[in-house]
Image (cartoon, rainbow, N blue to C red):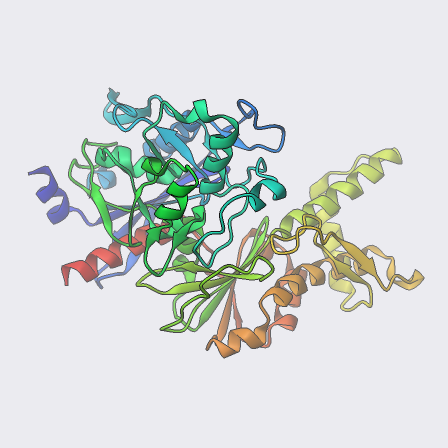
Amino acid sequence: MAAAGGDAQGNFVLGLDLGTSSVKAVLLEAGPHRGLLVPTASASQATRADVSPSGKAGPQAREQDVHRILQALSECLGALPARQLQRVRLIGVSGQMHGVMFWKSQQACTWTEKGPHGIFEPLQVSHLITWQDGRCTGSFLASLPRPKSHLSVATGFGSATIYWLLHNSPEFLQPYGAAGTIQDYVVAMLCGLQRPIMSDHNAASWGYFNTESRSWNSHLLEESGFPTHLLPDVAEAGTVAGRTCHTWFGIPQGTKVGVALGDLQCSVYSCMSQSTDAVLNISTSVQLAASMPPGFKPAEYPDPLAPVAYFPYFSRTYLGVAASLNGGNVLATFVSMLARWMADLGLEVVEGLIYSQMIRAALAQTDTQLTISPTLLGERHLPQELASVRSISPCALSLGHVTRALCRGIVQNIHAMLPSQQLKEWGIERVIGSGSALARNEVLRQEVEKAFPLPVSYGQDVDAAAGAALAMLQAVTREDN
């Protein structure tokens, strides 16, 4: 009865995104046209979940406390309008890709009544080992079997992390019967799944997954001793994983929950209105993504030196993605450097003031011969290529010159990874610019428009939570038709 009531009377869709540093929940109301969603409320909460790595992982490891992530999720749900939550009929979930956590197949959470709300809390779970984890060295990765997949395996990828634990801390894995991303865990707990279900988005991000056959490299993994019993079942992105097994913050028991999606795909989905759009997101890092033409199939084996990777999207299509590690974080490092230099000179200046002044100086300096390659963190396909400065002359050392060259370098770096000519060959007709760094930096926007000889549109910011909700609604709408 609860399931039927929720589906028949509800007209709200809940989108959740479990990110690296924060959790976001958004409520969207289905409009008069099917597939149209109107945002009505949202809440976000910093997780502050980073913890010291456990065991033999070393200082390069990056782990998070699952209890803190779930606490942030609960706080987000508690901040949304109760009446609207009671009318939620669908839940879409996305989250940080690549990472892995472990739990027991049974009794991995406990459901309790907390005030007026039903709430679940994790039990007998590991830390989340995130996508930022660096415990797998180059030599260790080289020792692993070659995947039967077009995607390479890198440190921070779930399968590589499991291999590392198998070789270095096999006792760690023994208590657990299931593994998944943090978003897979949330979906499994909401639906009471004994065995987790993972979308092809997240499976591809783990490695050792063939996106064409939609299957794990099971035989190869078993031959190398990999604990394949931990691997989730895999479903196509946009399908229903199950229904809520309890009332959750007023959301009716029996509400449909989608299989957890990748935050990259959901971010793109939230603002890509046409298949002829490319999405350029400049925030902490930079991503340039475009939907591949129908019928596109990736190469059979990975090319670790290729700057563009192809990730499964929706409806058996792919996204071509250039993902740079160097974006707004490079500008932030530059600002921090200036602040430290001033402190060394006996001057204390607020970093926000430094940023605004350097952008003002760069707007006055419309061009420069100074060339900055801003790859402070290297790139996944070129990890050893660090930052450099060229064409330095006495007349090009002002704050305006350096800031202009730095912003230009950030844009030209992503353009070199995925040039506009390639976008045109894929049928791309417009670039949608989004992200916090791009929104607050006019110099970056100017350089984007110089680098990409295509119309550039702003104002449709990426939102993985909204993308997850929209993808879920449209998938169920197609299913109903």
